[in-house]
Image (cartoon, rainbow, N blue to C red; front, top):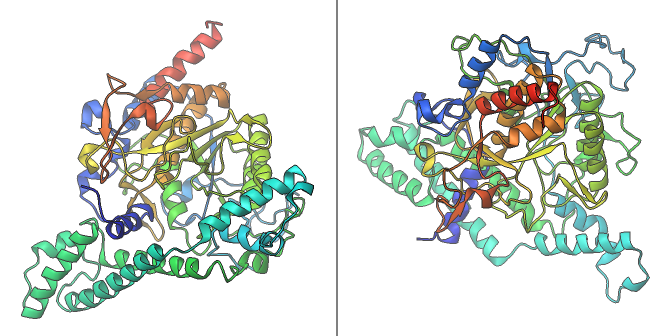
Length: 551
């Protein structure tokens, strides 16, 4: 049965915004586990670690650059793995390595200024594009025949942005419904918290709670019914629910007025660079944590390969170093910051770049495409998340993309990752949020209820292809660390042939919450889920064949 638009929209909020949840102990780190041994479609990391241990190879340190919204550098599991710039003296307020960035000890923040101010929020790109060209293109009797190719392309992009920026009556009704739902949840929560000791209670906790008073008992029933009607995960905490609802409402309120009101240009106010001039590159500061490091800290923990919360479950020597590049605000990233972040990572020794972000418009696509190809020329592998909008990327573009309209080619050093799940975790191997399309998405990786580090020494579960990408970044880094003679494109080829695939490629897998099923080779080109153990085995075989000049 299909869901009504309002309920489907509520589900979207809680699936796509990566809300933190508290989940059963046994499900932690399912993404690292093995199908044969543990019964879940994880990536077999522990098996891969054992293989590497048995091989008795000495790894070469490998740097993974995390291009994201910020990393909590004080987290006890991330701090020991931070990349340290060997040419920079910490805290002396000098540019010791003469690269233009002062005290860039662990990376760089392109979303700040020398005074220590940092961008937190940003508008969506379509609003920026619409208002950037509104005065030029929103006119009658435009003489398009006299325009050159570049201006015609800009006009087409502006028309697309103008079409998408419209706040429809249905969107207004949905927003009104969500505001009423938020107010009701707040009111019920206030009543329940008077009795319940845990103010961040979950539906699961509330179900077994025995109320004392009649008002609390009646409110409990109403709250549970509301959660069920909204389709909210039983393990989502009350504070997280309110936080995500408020954030969603704030964003939609901005969207409602965006066609008439230009978005505030906080970037211009804070960074103060000349955005249109790509050579104006030396802005920002060395605060790679920033004002909101939740997403980036979670991603960094996965790229680092954190497998426990108490440092006791693994004796595996970790060869990975984490470089932080803060380039993604709360909102759509800016192309210039992404391009400069890629170039910084390449120039400072990163061999893997993780990019867990994306957007539907990229007005300065040429800058990013050029940076990706610069990374290719320096033997750097880029891992990019496919996105969480359920788009068919064979039909709709999301950026950054391996295909370049500027260079008219495909980046061979880039892997695009979709999100997988498991029937034990959430009904199916497929998720109902991951973008897909076998012309763009290369492979799947776990992305549903993924456990990793969070700021302030915390851990938690988040959802999204943002989590899928760094899992592959970690596997790629292991291959590059233990088989350092392999090139970026060779590592990519090895990873893409190292997957779990169904015995019958025509097997259909249901998509949760949707009345449809798909084959895995419709979702991604490889039609499977990445496997770390197979990656190590295939890397060993590839290196032996390469040494012996065997095809």
